[in-house]
Amino acid sequence: MANGLEGIGKIPELRKRILYTLGLLAVYRIGVFISVPGVDRTVMETYLQGAQAGFLGYFNMFSGGAIENLSVFALGIMPYISASIILQLLAVVVPHLESLQKEGEQGRRKINQYTRYGTVLLSLIQGFGIALWLRGLNSGEAQGVLTDTGAGFLFLAVITLTAGTIFLMWLGEQITERGIGNGISLIIFGGIIAGLPDALFQTFKLSTFGGGELAPLTLVLIGVVVVGVIGVIVFFERGQRRIPVQYAKKVVGRRMYGGQSTFLPLKVNTAGVIPPIFASSILMFPTIIGNVFPDSSFVIWMQTTLIPGQTLYNVFYVALIIFFCYFYTAVTFNPVDVADNMKKYGGFVPGIRAGKKTAEYIDKVLTRITFAGAVYMSLVCVLPTFLQSEFGVPFFFGGTALLIVVGVALDTVQQIESHLITRNYEGFAGANAPRVRGRKG
Image (tube, rainbow, N blue to C red; front, top):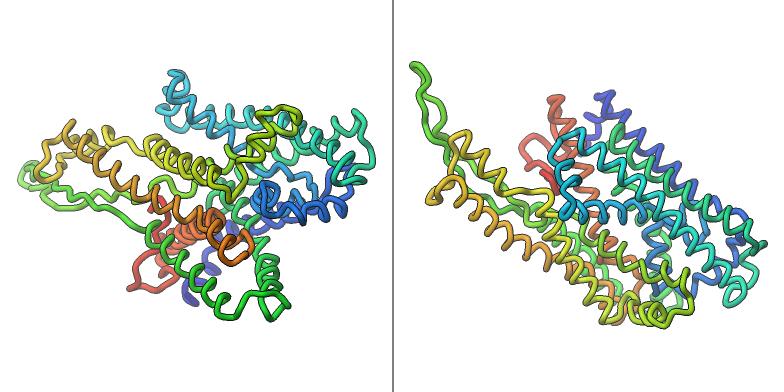
């Protein structure tokens, strides 16, 4: 580890990328404490203390405390994620978007541009919903949260919240392009990590050491569960199903080429942390819709039923995770293209005919291991429900937050290690240790 950290300091490009990433994340954390004009953050913080177990607490966790401070970043990066979901779903049914996905870098840039437009539109809608929600709170459960409730405040709040989301989107793109790791994932990662000290403090207050009722043995049990879940996440994120591939021998002139054996690695969790992020984003919509249509009976039913921890919420959450596991895997991995490339270079799976049969075999294997990955991810993400019901611990431990933190950390470390290896330095763990594989490794 010491050698790996020393190697980082010896590579100017990698050092600049890491410092650039940390700098932009620091800008994000500073912006979390800049409140929307006309909002009393003290009143909002007091109100939120009683809503930590509900959607507000869940949303506040993903935004890194931006809801609690009614920050300009209160919408977080979720509008961008929602726009990405919509574009990827439309690409399945809209031929133009489907053709853009196959055009390489040029097509990707065009789709990113559409995603940005969608982000602006969704931010305007969600910002208007939050502004109406704040005005409703001001006349109800959180009186005094606003200094002005007129049309001027609505306009200013919507513009401010939209600009905050666009700025976060820009930060994420800059980190991805000029920093290290995936920018959008790192912003979510930074928001969750920022809540760790408070979560530990709340756990201490619940223990007998802090005047609560949690026994020391229970604290030890919680620690063992958290460490065990981290181990399970690392195991599945690095898990692979290796399909053996044999390349036929061919003679070119007087030389013989090929004939070697290799394997095709299929990730158990090809989709990474995308499914729980997408699922969480979709399940947050009832709250946003409720701000726009507060008197609708259907919206009220959704808000009272789809609460994190409730049975129906968990059922929808698991169903969406499984759906996005298969959907995102299908978008990012095409068995037909893989089989065609293998056939082109003389490769084949032993016992399987090259071409269509190979594609069907790869698809069959991928479907089976994706199901295992979806089940694992679903179990990890509903873990907070059981921790809360049995021990009353803060919502931070386990689940989606832990999955995102570990997954993003693995990806980032894998990228850093790739830079180290390409510059002839050892990785973090040394020359003879196995390399850290991210979700794409």
